[in-house]
Length: 628
Image (tube, rainbow, N blue to C red; front, side, top):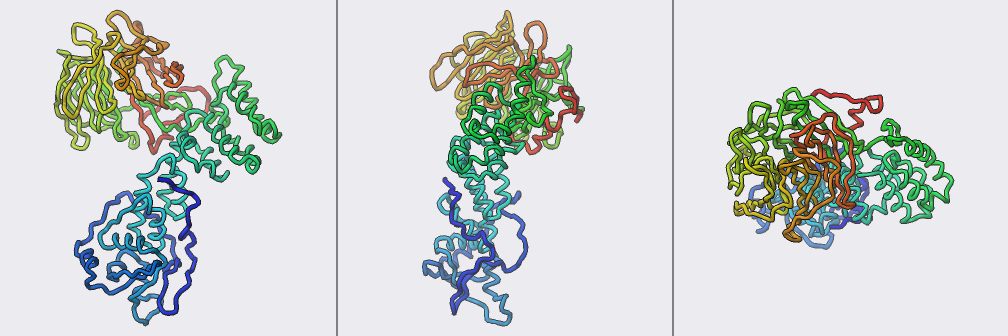
């Protein structure tokens, strides 16, 4: 579905007037009631309206009709004035002749609208719904707006919201703004912020933005960019589309880039050597503070930017990493740390209503965090707790059938699966799954092997589990579960036995990382691609050997967090980039811990409260503990 920003504007001006005939009134775009209408395009409690079937039956049979609509294409449509007036204050005002008190009521109205669109509006008037498509929505919404048919406006906006894609979002955003659909406009703007990297690649309309629109997007704290090079590339792409006419905006646009998050080498070779910058003294002046800042930063041994400097102000992350519980300083902990990937900073919080827990499972579903099973140093749990990051509250959920620590947890098809684990007596092969809507667990097909301290992931509509410990040996075997047939099958074993392993689905493959092979902790990893063959292949080694650590996907990279290296618990964090096939260091946690779990939540409405901009103390680099 494509949206052209140069679409025909049917009713932007609320005071435009059409020429009236001598005998019959034509509708105008003048509002009968001069008041500012509250946006109703995307109500929170939206639902399809059901109208009595008899209404449409009378319409189709032409029975009891008492009015006529004459369309632009000269087609006449018989209507029931009361039914049409019920959904349109505009038609009601015309039919009852409210502007001409004492005059006879109108029974025929001429509209400057094709009969196809008028019939769609009548479909809604008689049935409570109408067919909205990519082909008709661009005109149907303005006509519905013209006649004040709120229900059709809502249908159109719901459709457009579902159709938001990187290639069309700018057109839909402008369309919503043109027709005063402020809620759709806001959601469109949010989509643009969150998907800017894909928009640069897929949306041809990006190059047609005005410089004010572009600046508004690029200056936004919530712009979701993995690095600031993307912001510069956006400026470069837009300017070079019409260099002569846009050259004058370059100094202002260059100030949208937060240079404290750009490498000095990239800055020198790509930005300072950009021809429009070389040719323009004003551009060079605009970049002078960044030159000084990055030169000083490059000369420092630690190479860390002062995030309190405006040039290094971090943006608000779209994704927030939560690391929960674990084993630290000789005992389980209830501490929660959140990671701001834009600032590369961890923040520690104490959740007073969360009991210490280690060797538990953790997963994210519907922007809630579920903490499953675990061990507190004496008891093995079957309990489940759920964290709402918006309300900042923990709640009990239905208990599992069996206590499980060293449990493998995965989300698949909207359900949570708890696989294997240790109940204090035996390693288990049993599997159960949780239905969040029902708040119920049910037992399902057990695995072929007993597995505790294994790891599971979902990929391509299947659940995979690898490694673990069965009470006698560390396992290299792997299994796959088909939720349709409820059958487990073995797949090719890993190259190495691994207990305390982390399995994660990344792009089209499964990555089994780290763990304990029965002799030592591992820094190795291996990759399995179900679509490309049946062999595991070695991947680049991590910097740190580790077992019982947490693994998440963040910024399209694999992050590994904490763990046990064979002699001590560690706070170290590193990330794997599938493009370069390399590992990179990230900021360490505040706590050293293993047996922790982590997950990522995206698009939180209160993401700012978990960000550096909300958490940072005035003194750069100071640590702070936050109580909740």
